[in-house]
Length: 80
Image (tube, rainbow, N blue to C red; front, top):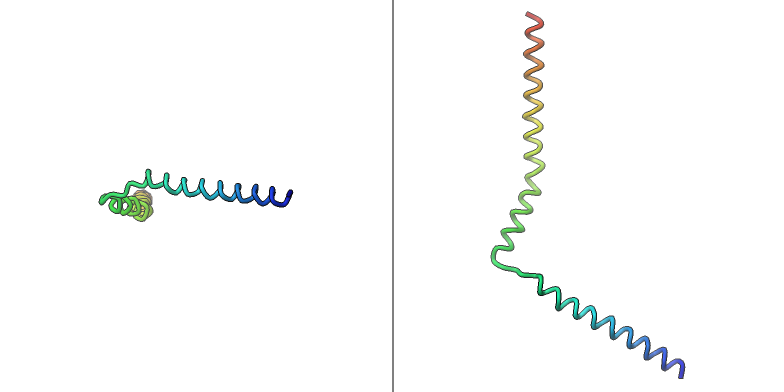
C-alpha cells in the first residue's frame, strides 16, 4: 500500500515536471520573432565585436605615434 502511494507520488511529480517544460518550450516561441532582418542584426552585432579591438588599436597607435614625434622634435631642439 505504501509502495503504491510512493509510486503514484513519483509519477505525479515526473508528470508535472514534464508538462512544465513543455509549456516553457511553447512559450519560448512567443519571443522568438525571426524575420528577414534578423541575420543582418546578428551580422552587424558580430561585426562591431570583431572590429572594435582593431579600431582601438589604430587609435592607440596613432596617439602613441603622435607622442613619439613630439618627443623627437623636443630632443632635436635641445641638440641644436
